[in-house]
Length: 82
Image (cartoon, rainbow, N blue to C red; front, side, top):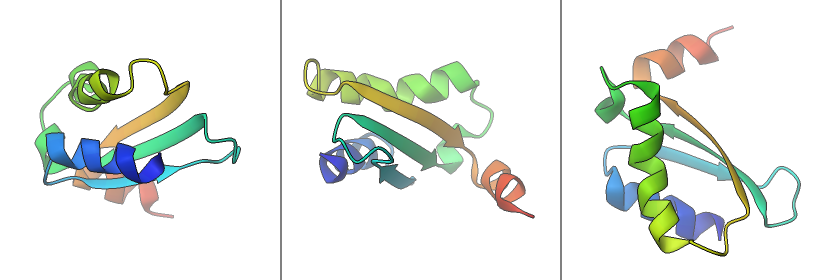
C-alpha cells in the first residue's frame, strides 16, 4: 500500500520527493510527506488537493487515514534544520 501511494503521488507530481510511512504499523493509518518545487507559491489547501485528488480516485474505499504534510524544498530545508 505504501509503495502504491508513493507511485500515485509521483505520477501526479513527478518532481516530488515522497515519504510514506506506517507509524502505527497497522496498514490503515499512514502518513505522507511530499516535498516539491511545484508547491512554490501554491496555498496549502491547493497543495493538499494536488496530492489527495489522485489518491481519492485510486483509493475511494480502501484508504482509511492518511496524515499529509506538504513542503516546498525551501520550507523542508528550514523545517529540517536544527
